[in-house]
Image (cartoon, rainbow, N blue to C red; front, side, top):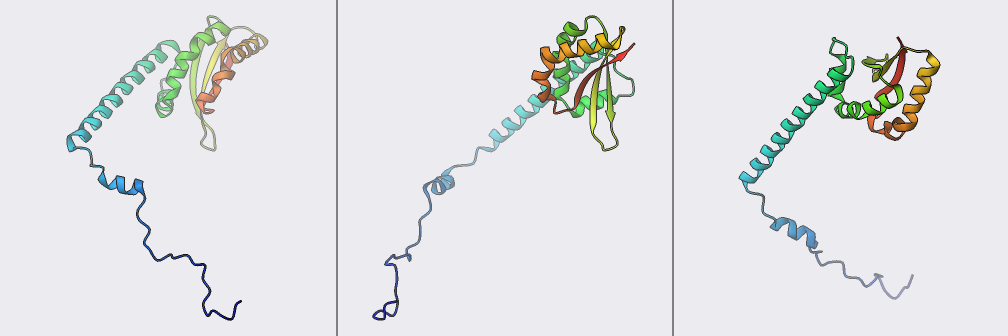
Length: 162
């Protein structure tokens, strides 16, 4: 402390007002889009949603023709809640056929005691369990391991002995 001065300062003058930053000034000048433009955007979104719904219904028809689906509606409800699975099942079918051959595939949706929902694709296998396990292993190596992350853990491929 220096006893000569009563008040010691840094010499900086902080009294001037800081002006607004450039991006803040430019935001005030942007005019809102015309009201008709908003309606065009909303109408386009409605058309997109309708198109996506039609595509989903077509995929659900394809799934119903390709897989055995229970009549209780559980699979349709599950796939409607997890829309990516419809397209994923259709993409998986050639790989399933390549690993399992000409077997029937059945879908079933389950919910465990904690509320976790799961969709199972069961290959109804006519042979023994060793052959079915080898077919599952081929399917996993050929396609499933590389693509399983896309289903967020909601899809499982397995077999049932017929």
